[in-house]
Length: 318
Image (cartoon, rainbow, N blue to C red; front, side, top):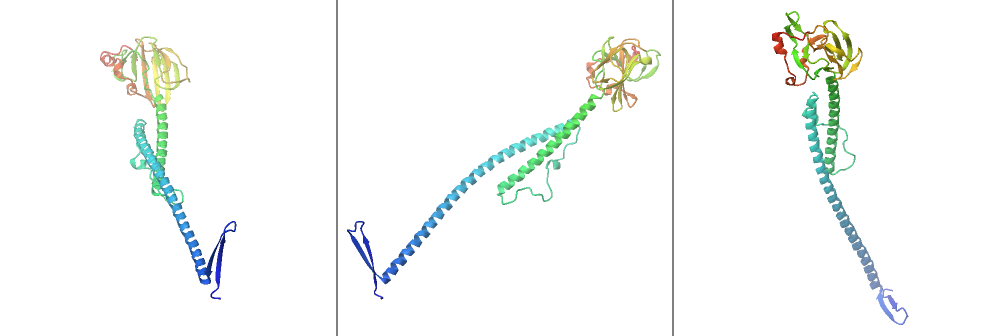
């Protein structure tokens, strides 16, 4: 039994040739074991090489993706720097506009728009350091933009309020021609020749010269009034009123709304007057104040004869 032999016969396709191999039992077992070992070794080497090739391919693909991501991050960094520069310019513009609107400047620590608490600013899951830093920068820029938008809305509201206030302040010269013939304050009365207080400003101009409302408001009086002759009073709100006396003609009626610059009458010499002129008053809470404190026009462009007449006596009247 121990000497039992095995034969392996190989025949050609047409059975014309035959090759025979004879093996003992021991040799057959050894050959079979060798074939199995070779097969296993071949499979192991093949699997290792395949996994190595796949790993190298995956690594190359990952490196290519990382290179593309780094390039995109570099572009994002350039854009972020550009946005930061524009925000810096906006902050300078904001400061200028806040000064123009008479608003306090935003403190530097407020412009840092810091955050507090433990709010989750990043999405859950792992994140590379570059992406984490980028997310933090974008979040800060978003907060800065919101702060700037809020500031611009505040400036816009304040400027609108200032514009409305300016529209109702008596800053417009009521006549665009003529000269100041008598100023506000103590002067020699042209009729009594005594020193008296003059509650307004006299503007000498030809009869019929248009008289304009110095600010927007409502006409509260339009008609004759004692020494003022043809007389108009306009209420501008906020305690401000303007009065226009000695008019030749009244072009508005009581209760009428007027805007700044609306022609309300004409220069005349009605009432207690010696020559055509406009007697113009500004009243604050019922108290007469110097109109020149409110006129924004260059005073040098409007000839002032008040000083000469204050010494010689005003020839125009009240």
